[in-house]
Length: 268
Length: 263
Image (cartoon, rainbow over the protein chains, first blue to last red):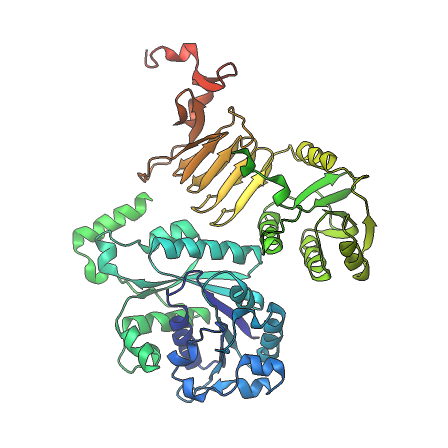
């Protein structure tokens, strides 16, 4: 059965598209057939991050208008077996399609894929409605910032009122050294407010920026990186494979800090 | 401050004998996405409300002067279906709504505004909904809960959410957002929470901000109107020490409570 998962956040710039590209690649590496749908009409980026920009010929709009078949609009990633992209139209706005059309497209695709990831645009307007229309699961991306968490909370509320089947949280761009100094919200702080099950924590790393610019998802990199491992772990957890959370605080901890953290946690 | 609670701005359900009346708010021509907002708000509340009717109960849509098209009627029908209500009849004052409803296959009752006075409907809403609203969920950012009587929430009220009530607000969880008790001017109303960390507290026409110092302690607290404005007290013994004095319109310490407590 095909699982349709929307990746959303409310706030912009928290890493939805980067995570979609990497997570899609990681799930495909586990041997699944994956389709990534870019729902960010007018501001599409997913093709760039996957390095597929030059191979986009038709978009979802062309397929809906009947100018090509849906199969033709889908771009196959040659580097990763099983990974596909359905690009958004760059010359349209979010109002170009309706939630119903989105649902139809995803329904048609669902018999061909194991996973469909929908990259949701920022905001809670039409683009968001389109992106969540056919999804049965949601991954909420947030960064350890008050504004991002507040927006995530709003989005979780909207998803709950739409009866979203399962909602999981990804905390992106965590900087353990700042959490250690109490300069950044900790994962516990975020969970305390959102009360959504956690599926992964991705540490901040400048290699994410270089890999995005090169159009090469970090998980493809032969040299292992913490964010890459974290994303692969999320992919495994999505497939029901238990994998332990990385102990991101390990490097920061002196013995006393560990004890303090342990006590702090048990007090809560 | 009392305009904060605008009953007409949300969809209200009223149980009347065997049927449930669904009151739609009147249309605001200035707001572009009013329908979407009202529907979102309705869906949020609907899942949390304890329903007191059986599946298949008939619903009467009281759409007043709102313009509805077939798509909106279908949307409403689907939502009501989820809570076991089926649309029986649509009552409207707008010809276009009546036509849309009839062509979509609903029974329609078009009434002139003369027969169905607006005033009577409004007073009915207030009376029939005078029972408390009981919600079992976290209230998240962007959600506004309005109710013409006491509101009880089992769960947290997150920052960015607001709870507006004619009566008291009782939160069995942490209050981090905004709570407004006695929104129509009732000074006797109180706000109670297991953990008070509000963005803002409002009672009747008064506003207060609480200290932002986060604590790890869980002490149930109560906010009330004293002669010096809104104050917060430990909830567990509040009613033992305080009385509402209607002459002053404030809560005041009882005489016997003024004696030293540790004698």
